[in-house]
Image (tube, rainbow, N blue to C red; front, side, top):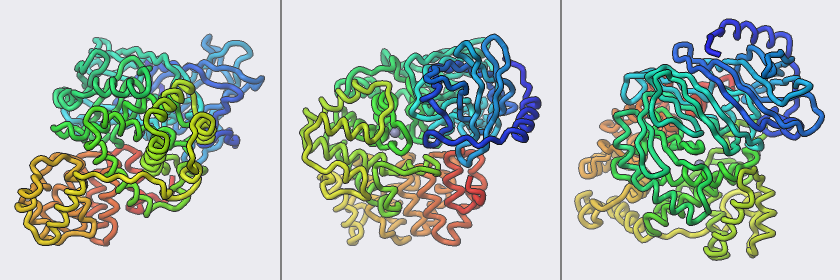
Length: 614
Ligand SMILES: [Zn+2]
């Protein structure tokens, strides 16, 4: 349907909200769905992308599997305007929206027809839908056309699609998306490679996926082939740079297949989004969504692609059953990422990454509540985004690396390959994994101490790299009075990679004087760096020292991109002092309209701006 009856939708919503306020109990964490009664098995979306109204308008047709004699289907919604629910033949069905629950939205209960297994929900998303970011032309790289992208993980799919928004449910999906004719639409599905004259695009995802992997992007996009089954989408001015940066993608796919079995999703493409994308990458199946901040010009930040590709096994194939089991997605993925990087760039290079990861993890553990440092999280009554810390990722990684070191790589790899084959296209709980581990791998260690206790157990692997030991020596030499020029000469810094520089800058956590900052900057040109990882680490030192020549760069970096990983530590560092907080608020006021909701929620909290704690 291509009409835009949005005023009607608003009216319907008011009526429903007024009369129907039933409180439905949650059967699953973070979801109102009851898939054990009635499960959604297929979704068909027919949506029009209305850039003027900032709404997705149309219908979702859900095919269900009735598993009991329950007569009602329960879905998750958050801020959707529901116009009508009917059978595919047009017979209206009774429905109601239940009481709003903070962060979760409202359950949609639908009376199923006596016969037939499909329901059609006519609806519209709202301009405030948290998953969807609508960018003006000015907020894109090429400044010519508007852009839209979604970010559904963890529980934001329900802000643009009525669905069973839990990773415990999988469905196939298809879609017909109508966009303005000069734009291209892509999804986490089979994708077009050229624009159509009509602006109508059709999509199909034949492999069953959880709702958090539903994804849509619309913009002035170009496609370039990388290899026989991989390619890149980006705005015209970005696409060449992106193709160059991702040259190793086919090798990464091959390396991953050698380790963990066949790639099950046919194509592997990457889309580079405008810089407000809140994450480094999102592993939307068949189409990784990526931040342009990894386009460093020297291929130094492509570990992110290895990470998102690895999710094609860990996460997308075997999926965490609840967000409390998030480490099953991310810990395995960081482990795979390391192995892919090692296979392509060698052990020494990968070990530098592992060491930086360990240092970051130890730092973060200090700032977290003890319970939040268990691998098995407890996110009841919390936003599942609270679980996106280094614990799921990096403690998870070191747990798996410890297991590998205990049983040997050959045994471990065979175990992993069988695990992913056995549970492909299924959800997994922490307990399910531990049971499988107990049954299939003889390992003489207390694995539960990693999962159900805080911090890092004593048997955490030690990572020593000669390269980074040299970097630490260089940093110590500088603090001991050697000039940056002498350091450069003695340690051959011209050959250093991003990892070397990250480690170097992180060696100065105790802070530097203005004089030290000035001398470092003169020799190594940190303020002028175009590498986002180096810039981030340098700006933390800039804030700590109050180094005035770096402040303009800080402002440009905070307003120029919206990646939460970079924003959070910088705003936190600013917010530590009264004067810094004033600066932070001034910059944020300007930058906030350009950030995705995932980032604004975090920064609002850091700056004390969200009184209603939504
Ligand atoms: Zn990940």
